[in-house]
Image (cartoon, rainbow over all chains, first blue to last red; front, side):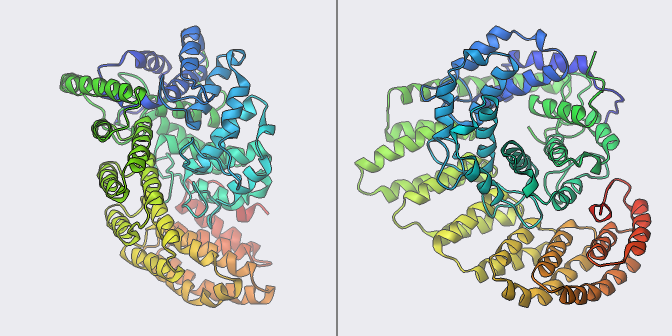
Length: 298
Length: 300
């Protein structure tokens, strides 16, 4: 295992830029269905490294727009079916690229509001899977577009709260086990809806900070291994609850640094594993959240 | 991508060569399936081709959507739809066995079951139980099992007994403790209170057996909070007083275990005038658990 003292920013930039040319690896193709989200993670990682200007803005905008379906929703790639997961990534991307003026906002809003059900929950697409991830992914673009009025926010809030569990955490539907990723989406949704005061932040905060393991990284559920992405879901939830100082930030930073690939760049889920764009982005997010004035800045 | 070890340059090159044919096949098949869909070829043959593609990547959600469109059409054309659905359940079972964490595959199974006139819920429960033997914590599987139980009108006692079985097999099965709390939460306050003594003994047995495992401790905290919520101040303080003896015993045997200590801190915080004891425990906790930074009990 390699130990690093600093964030290998140049290597990570190289890693991100190389992604689109990595077509002789099956990993490239196997995530073809979520390319829009992949681009969002990559572009956002570049933003966190102050390197957005190194990307081809116009090409990115055209690509994102080409994934939009006549219904207004976005697919994970060109000609793939519209789904809220990718609609969220697409709107986030266009906002980052300062290109929301290129978007037919009413169409997107119509698509999103068509997903809300009577009980306040959101389905992911016309096929009807329900999940609090979809609540979050519906509310984020609406908030960005300043169109939260297009859905029933009161019901959206009560549905999210109905997914809260004995341990203070949240699951994907009422009764489902707490999971750090799901907690991020529910706490995030409540933050957008102005409902954070309805959570017992001490109970949830305790569960969240108990995700930190002695090696510094955080897991997503009790008795699981530490992982960079779960570290982000937990840390960001703690931040929204104003309890970021409940974990040991120095230890977490060391863990993230040790998950870096010091040859090809990028950050992996755990030390010694293969890096990918998802963990690279979330690793950088953790770094930024816990150490806002850190070494990503030139 | 999770838990894939990093490769050497040589291994990377070997992988590249080995994958080339696989990639070509995948790309060609993707094109074929997308073309079939554009032409609205909603046939058995197309279903098969889409299946071959999914077997290469079960996360290709658009292809699952295509399968549903085909199945909708075939079921309209065919009087014996249940045979079609049964075949589809077999296909999904293979998908789930290969990739037990695929949201799309689990959803597709729900979709099929919902369309069947007489689905075999017992078979579904059997499948879930089998999968939960392999991975006791698969939340997709727990969620699907919960959904099936609801559909078949399974009794709360039955689900409760299942959690007992899973917990006794493995005390650190947090998913089972979660399920147990969910069932108890549906009970009226008085019924829950009546069960409390036996639940407390049950959970104490678990944390005495493996004191470093978090699962039982979270459940214990919840039980205590639930009891306090539904009791008079006097009842609550009587109960709390009885909780220290077993904890102190455990602290004596396992002085370096953090959970008995932080749980004692939690109990003391629910009582009046125990500030000094709380401070003493905090000193010990700082020694045995340096990672943990803050305790909400000491905020107030």
